[in-house]
Amino acid sequence: KNQVEQSPQSLIILEGKNCTLQCNYTVSPFSNLRWYKQDTGRGPVSLTIMTFSENTKSNGRYTATLDADTKQSSLHITASQLSDSASYICVVKGQGGYNKLIFGAGTRLAVHP
Amino acid sequence: DAGVIQSPRHEVTEMGQEVTLRCKPISGHNSLFWYRQTMMRGLELLIYFNNNVPIDDSGMPEDRFSAKMPNASFSTLKIQPSEPRDSAVYFCASSYVGLRDSNQPQHFGDGTRLSIL
Image (cartoon, rainbow over all chains, first blue to last red; front, top):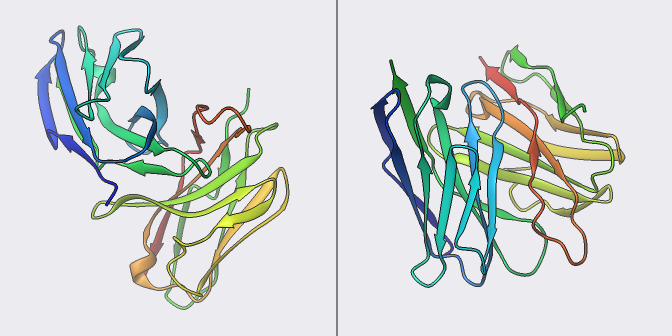
């Protein structure tokens, strides 16, 4: 069964600190992996999209890594800010068919001053 | 640029009433998705349209749910009759899906928070 699992479920860090969120998936065959940020009361917003051939991609203070062999991805946040407080959702798309995505349950991050 | 626009943002209604949620996708996008998000189940795909045609409605919970896309700039999700277990946040998303490009992000609206009493 195609699944996407994220850890930790929730995380609290102090402003200015770094953190890393994990994503493991069993989707096969694999097309791409996405990280979305969802602020409270808002829709998810795309941070990065990585294909099979990419193993790192950055978007400002956000850096995503992908190991397609071990089916693992991570999202690293550098120098966290209060505005980083949100849920981070890992999403995987398989090959073929249309743009159907498989969503992880998300990691809820709280950045405290 | 305007993103995906959903209305209403909040809806509170009594069990048994008809509920209609509306979505205006981003201009130029050829794919539209309706999702439901709950604490227990996270984000679930309900239905997917491509070029205004429903392609996959396997996520629609039951016959009480229906969705239409009469043109490229408008879609509705209807629940009739509504039940308390339908309470959730409903998101609409759009993207461009090309024959050789499946790596475009889905752009989400800010959702409709639905409460059925």
